[in-house]
Image 1 (tube, one colour):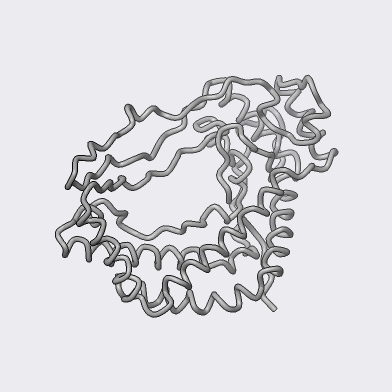
Image 2: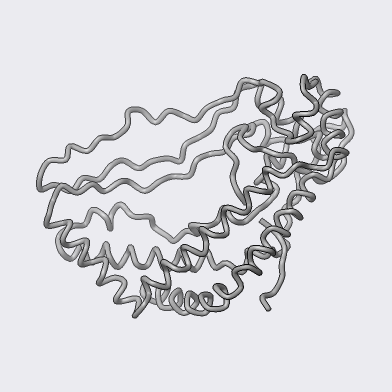
Length: 305
């Protein structure tokens, strides 16, 4: 049987699905409450080898892009990221999955988050480049070994199967006593509710009708010229900062302070672990079959880069 474990991270956009968290007790007038501690405990989804998948992906793209450079097209090689990243990092649930985890966090980002950078776009209007990239894709996978593309594709599909069930953590109806404590605390902080029953079903900051912020504007959207025979590289995208309104920051701070008086974060993280454990059990055969294959593929990929 697959080993059981225990903990998880989805980043919530501003005021969208942010549910309450928890940790220590903090009485009014004592200054900022302490940050919610980072729990380093293992979780069932630790069985999913997202970081190794990222190594394979990075190696394949680097080999492909070096092949393109050798054919006279250096654009992809020069525009690509400088290191691997885990494409399924959002499967790791933490307290931050549900909102701010410190007073400073609440003040600076409200209920939002900074958007990570995206690599520049490479747009081809050159048939010779298109032919070259198709051949280089096959060459790169070939260097990683027989069935490497198949193993990568199957493992990526497994990651996609793990995502959907976690939404239930955010949609679940929370215990009324916990939510009631949050309501009473927020009322003390100057945030009474018009519809207590709706908040009891799903406690969302949106229900306080506070004006929220927005992301920095990056200027006009880049448009390639698409001149025949050219390969164009767009500008670097991001990171994009989120700017909360003063009202949002104030509510986020009250929200963070009040949730310290409940056990909602632990409740939601435990719910996430139960969901993960069930999903892992239902996909045990896939993990048993694919994990050793991906481990070996990642070892080869790491050696090549």
